[in-house]
Image (cartoon, rainbow, N blue to C red):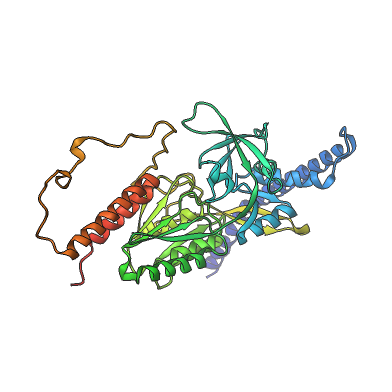
Amino acid sequence: MNKILMAAFGGTLAGILATTQLVGPLVAQETERSSSVYEQLDLFGDIFERIRSQYVEDVNESDLIEAAIDGMLTSLDPHSSYLSPEDAADMRVQTRGEFGGLGIEVTQEDGFVKVVSPIDGTPADDAGIEAGDFITHVDGESVLGLTLDEAVDMMRGPVGSEIIITVVREGEAEPFDVSIIRDTITLTAVRSRLQGDTVVLRVTTFNDQTFSNLEEGLSEQVEAAGGMDAIEGIVLDLRNNPGGLLNQAIRVSDAFLEKGEIVSTRGRQPEDGDRYNATPGDLAEGKPIVVLINGGSASASEIVAGALQDHRRAIVVGTKSFGKGSVQTVMPLRGDGAMRLTTARYYTPSGRSIQSLGVSPDIVVAQPRRPVAGEEEEEQTSPFSRSEADLRGSLGNDSLSEDEIQQIEEDRAKAEAAAELREEDYQLAYAIDILKGLTALQPSDD
């Protein structure tokens, strides 16, 4: 009995000694790490005091501290930053849908400002700014070496004032200047219209009004068409949509999904992750959907496209999206400022991260560049383009009723309208053609 007790006690003692040997170095390492951090903070304080007392000119202490904070955040990734009280107020206004500026969403790449996308109907869009453009100078001053916030500040100014930005564009041999007049940007989150028998929902941003605008716009167009039975399908146009609010991306995805995961987020700690699932109900009532994306589709746009693609609820058409697969949390700070910090990556229902990769369309369709003035294609004048009906004295068709002839004429008018749309927006026309094909393959109720 004593031997058994001694053996048990010996085992316990060995366990205690082993634990002590393991914890000791860890505690020492953590203490050394904390000491190093405090030393670095002391160094920061020393430098701050040296600047205050010895810099060649008087400095504003608040500006110094804000610059240090912003530098710390922007060193992490392109989307983390410090928001001054003014910037924080501007951001809150933007999420409500109205703000002053040029109307472009930008990021930073290789030291230059890169356009994620112009916003529909804004001065930048009207001036011809395109997704993927690089802005190298603002009013003749280089933006190289500036932080993104500093470059954005250079582009801000009073409504009605002119700004000249220098643009480098792929396919253009030389940089060129673009003049833009600043204006108040009023965002219409969703524009809806009927294109033949297709409802086109153009989603330009994900702000507080996006889901309600989409729901209302879809309802209006379905009613105008004579009910859902008269609709062939829906085109959800997310091209040049730079993203926005995560909760709005989830609601838009949920609008067309009956069940299943929409998106998941994973932070630094496992407990920081979240999963968002669809609730029953499909606003499209099962009608086929095509999602249009391009290189200007980012963030929340990619969440929607990825969710509908993974659930095979929609066919994604266009070109590869921007590839912003991270989530930023805006944290209020004392003094009415805020901190925008990247806190998680998001993943589509299949578990793929879009970060730096983007959403790859099911069908790649590039938007042809508009022809340069003087290079328009000549109309086809070949004699082989004529038909039998064009021949003098050709026989008429006596096998068709008046109703059938009228139907043929209506179909011809639709085909001509489709041809015009291809000239105006090739990607959208392609998406509508896909919907027509999907509708034709659906079994009849008869």
